[in-house]
Length: 379
Image (cartoon, rainbow, N blue to C red; front, side, top):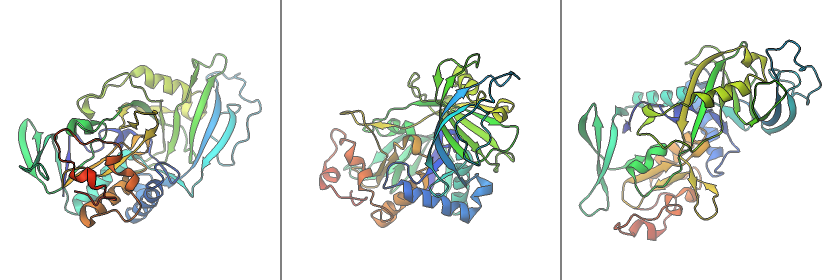
């Protein structure tokens, strides 16, 4: 097996996402399987130490921003009731708390450490990792099967022979397969070293401005306290902004532009609700793009697409949107089952079949699409 990566392992959203892992995520046919796989991989390989796997609480909360620089800030007034373990919100900022996940069905990982660890473990099992930019998929003379992939490495044109090709290029997938259409929202995030360790509560807040808080209007960042792992030997906090569609997808992960103001807006918001964050140290400001599928008819978000294309040996795994890290191991498992065993059997994956969302490219025989076979039994 060969893994062809354009820039670096975990250079995109697989290294810069929040890392929530939820049994209750979407799609329902994949999320529970992936949640189980995350737990099993962590147990087998020491994921709690290597990539920060742990079980967490999740909640949607309404918070009021306070100026925590001011000693006389009215933060002692009554607030909504805290769960017993949530003690890192400043007094008075919590206005409502609605729990949406418990440790039995919610967890987290450090995406960069998880992804790089998986690549390293694959190499130890004999996989080959090549850093090179794929430029073309080559097919047999009759167009019915894949034959090879052209790529560029260090300015030189190279080629890999292949019997099976899995295209899992995230938001860059349409650059390799033109029949795939994706939206590519960009998200910004900030990683902070807090002044003390923080309990495992992942929060999805709406933060409104109190007078003189320094916050303008309403903002909804996400808050992920993370335990120490192989990247940081201390706890961190990951916080991210809502997506934007303002900047087109760049040529690769190494060319992603970071809007400093968006990072500053996130920082201003989260440091107004927690003294531990407020007094902490910013470690990273970053941005990444996600692969998002949206049906044209009614705008409903759907996906991902995991399964066979219309050419023998060509497979697709993309469109995971915000649940990419959560659904990564389940996607890998059913993809391997399809390729090596002919069908997915760990879950009913028929709803993920690309045929539901793609139209065959012009000039390509309809064989695979018209057969309508399920769970990878096509091509």
